[in-house]
Image (cartoon, rainbow, N blue to C red; front, side):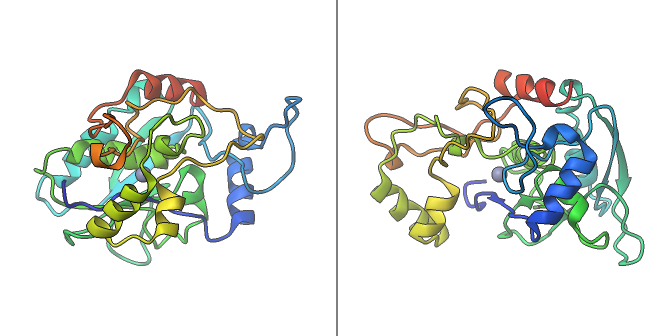
Length: 247
Ligand SMILES: [Zn+2]
């Protein structure tokens, strides 16, 4: 856990395909202008699945219990979303991959965990996985990492990058920390850690430091006494957002 690399948001390979997949799946994904009108523009669309649908979720099964552990972690979202989760085994055959969400469990201990954001999974070639998770099932916080990645698969972004995130970052110390710990450049930290500008085409839920979608923040990276340990459970805010986008 301590050594696992931070999760990275995957930008879609093709933004136009991402837009079309999102809107075809769920018209509410279209960006909304300040007047409340739906706009036809590509880029800052949301990527939520159609409420009420069944999501087929394929997960690698090595027969080591990992498949069940991942499935149980994902199922913690189930009571809060109007979706039916159908779990299948990810078949390691280029012809036979199935599943709207395809989760590869990698035995590489230093691999980055990542997931396509929501409906971006629909734009991935069907023989490729859409999420990668590690296999250190017994490590502290493994379940919370799976819940975090599945939050991305449901269409949620990183909470620590919320435009209202009130984290008193010490930027220079943060650059140093991420360079030392993960080898990240300053530009990389700017793109993945610090708040993103407010987008007028998006509505935001209130900033929630207890969200499962929030990175942990070390005290050494902030001014004054401010830290955020790893969030291990879905927060009240996570549950409210799940209900809002999957009514
Ligand atoms: Zn993430």
